[in-house]
Image (cartoon, rainbow, N blue to C red; front, side):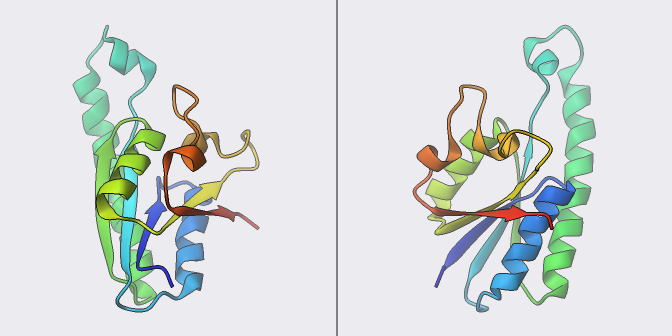
Length: 143
């Protein structure tokens, strides 16, 4: 059984399906569940030319609310969740945090509207999540 699970969550319906997959796994109470939201600044914010700190503050507020909502959904199912809010490129953040925490399973949502889960699978340098992490990956697809 998995001892440490990470759920990538950004408040989208696709990432919410990742929450529900974790709930359906019905992990034992001893399982560490980490709920990760990543704030990714737009290329304009990283290049300058306007106030990236304003963009960051707005995105941070939204993601804090989404993390609280996701945590509440999982808590209602009896799961103990540790929330994480990070800034950066999702693939890099997922990879680093998964290594640091010793994650066994990563659960990501998949959007049928985009090429195969681009948000979580490919970073800015086309780094593939599956090549970046040592953990197993479960891809949750909306019905």
